[in-house]
Length: 133
Image 1 (cartoon, helix red, strand yellow):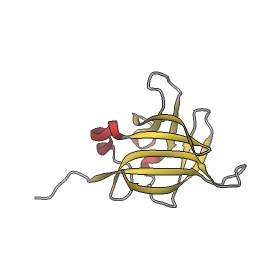
Image 2: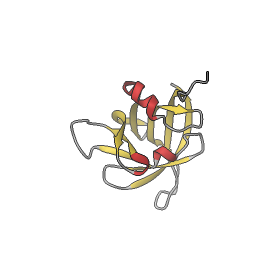
Image 3: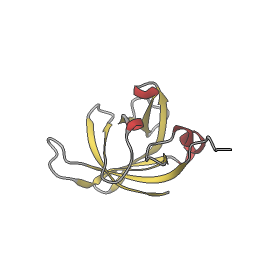
Image 4: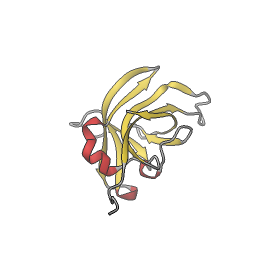
C-alpha cells in the first residue's frame, strides 16, 4: 500500500537581497531568515504548514540585525489559490511582506525569489542557504 501523503521537511531558509536595477551590490545583511516545510522538490508544502504553522517563523534583517519578527502565513486567494506572507503583526492589516508566486518557486540555494514589501515595492532575493531546521 503506497503512502499518498506528501512528504515535507522543516527547513531554515536564508534569503539575501540580490542585485537589481538601482541596487547594484548584493547585500548579505539585508533579507529574511525563515522556517518553512519544503517538499522533496523544494516547494513550500501547504499541508506541512497547516500541521506545523507554529514553527514557521520569520526574521527580517537589515544590516545583519533582526528588525522584525513574525510568522509565515498562508492566505486564501491570489495566483494558485493562495498567497504566502510574512506577517509581523496579526492584528494589523498591511503589515505583511508578500512572497511573489512563492507557491511556484523551489527554495534551493542560488535560486531567486521576489517579495512585495509593505510599501508595495517588489524586491529580488537570492536563496543563500537551505538547511534542516
